Image (tube, chains in turn blue, purple):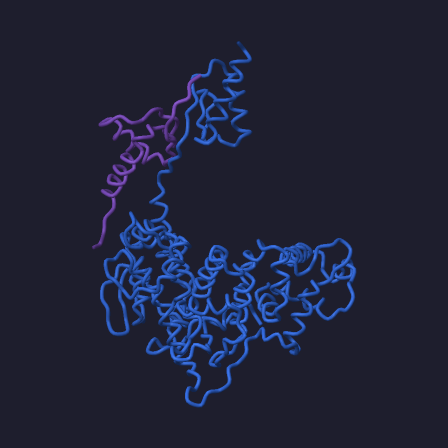
Length: 462
Length: 64
């Protein structure tokens, strides 16, 4: 069970959970599905620690556990303990280690089964006249919904008007700062939004869901209910229908929102049952959240589809309008064929991307992740010339740095100068200094303090 | 002692020379600090940036 967050120390969601109160988290841990999901989001070492403690009936001395840890891994171990304690999974105490008892019960239930909390969702009774949708239908649906959102973002500002996602999605995009309305007009993608487009789908999904979680309170929804529903979805089975009967009012209200994101599927005629899509069932796992073989896209999405040559020419084997639109952010596209897009990375196209707030590293990492299998034979993967040039273009943009502030000059004496400079340095506001010329440049923020300091000093002299 | 409000520009020496030339046409430099630093008038910042951009653009060639 590998989490998607193995490269980062902690999943986006864990950081969010850190900021929640102990009471809220303990309520959350009452649900076995939530325990299992959080367990899956933890890093490998944290999971190891939890597993070791899970079946112990009594507390164990911290020293016993620490004795297993080699000296050079001490830091990693301490780091893991602090993550666990901030999640209130493992109360921090100097002498004894024991898992949060609520979590212990919940996670045990999740592993061995039992209990009747229905926290993994209650499957709906099979209905002869309406067989559950096939996995392909669900995948196509999820992909269509999700790409509608991304496509709307990428096409805003280009004059074309693609299908609009629902109003709730638009609000979410706006609140998360991915899109903004310019002068009260139509929504335009922001530089944050451009960066978002280049992220992997799993990260994108969680970024939007986190924003959803942040908005929960002002919509007077119960955060614990919302979180536990997401976790419930993440442990459900793809291609199976579940009943809405056992959901709380908050969770029923969420159904509509999640339908807009393509996370769940509901038949219009039978609102009493719903189906999680692949987006939902992979929320806490490492499997790709979007179907890899949907429709005519073949498996290009998983395998990568971009070939980049040393002469800056780029060939993208795709017929997906979204992928083409994303490429268009930083590639100057030349021709389009039924299964191939040809373009070149030029100074103009990269400059346009940089002006939109995309960084050179993001472009390079996008090209790396989506490189065609043929490219994987190359070492390094991307032509070095192109990588370097993209970075150089970025540097070129920053040839001049400007900082607003005050130039302090014409000091009466060297001692005077050094005295004030010393004070300014303590504040950490000095940007430039020259002792022979007896002047220095301080930031705008530091000015009131420095002026006050000089005034106090002059007053003292008088 | 004097405090002068302005914008500190940090740049390479080539850019600095261009700025000095631009300054001869329309003055905006408050203080020439050293090879890599200049202080200019705060309200001229955007104009200077724009003109510098245009100047640098003259020195690049595009294949298109």
